[in-house]
Image 1 (tube, protein in one colour):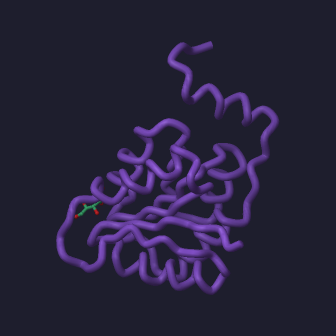
Image 2 (cartoon, rainbow, N blue to C red):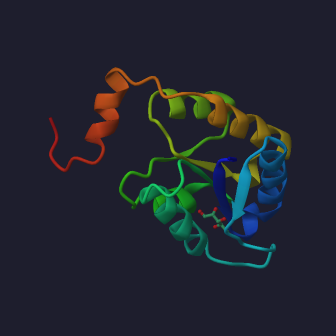
Amino acid sequence: MAERIPIASDHAGFPLKQALSARLRELGFEVQDLGTGSTDSTDYADYAHPLAQEVSRGEVKRGVLMCGTGLGMSYTANRYPHVRAAVAWAPEIAALARQHNDANVLVLPARFLSDEEAVRILETWLNTPFEGGRHERRVEKIEREESK
Ligand code: RB5
């Protein structure tokens, strides 16, 4: 059965969302498009919340968000338990976000990437495993209130 991947953007990310959705379908994923549906001005949090809730509840393994800078989407998604939303602007960042941080949400700064660059980042994030080991302990500490 195909893995379902939710994807969402605001107006600034809408054109890139269309391109990445098409690529995900080509790769065999079931794409769950959570909006927005056009370049009409809208509010990023309205789209980040539903996607982050799905990831947080474990209903999906991972999801993809984009807005102009990636920042508003990442702030919103990272409010949810078990969500690790990483803004990535290069394939190397996406690889490290998986290897070291076990990022389960990829956030793209749509206004600063070409479609081709974003596809390379997406594919790197999809295909890079978490390294575990010492990074497992560090990732576990993210949700602990106390330090050390
Ligand atoms: C929209 O103009 C822009 O503020 C938004 O896409 C995003 O960059 C916010 O973090």
